[in-house]
Image: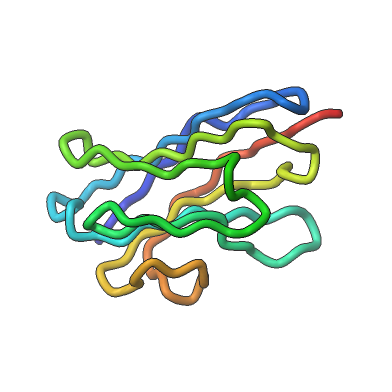
Length: 123
């Protein structure tokens, strides 16, 4: 079983930055595809960014140029650097992993999920 633990959420003013971290428990971490998703109250879960085991990335149009996904295989950790945050970025953020997801922004492609970390951006 894969366990994912997110951290780094918090409250920030518009224009600020946060970095989310997601630590994975499995030793085969380097072969995972990882994704970041967010869900605001009353809304569907939305794919934000994804990174493949070769380091290639994909982003939702709403965050391109502001968010950067990366990973550190030695630390079994992936990151989501969020800059120029906007109030509409407010949501619970989740990391997800799977061996077979590809660089997908679809929640259905991932079988393993973290518990989420809250990001709140005030205007």
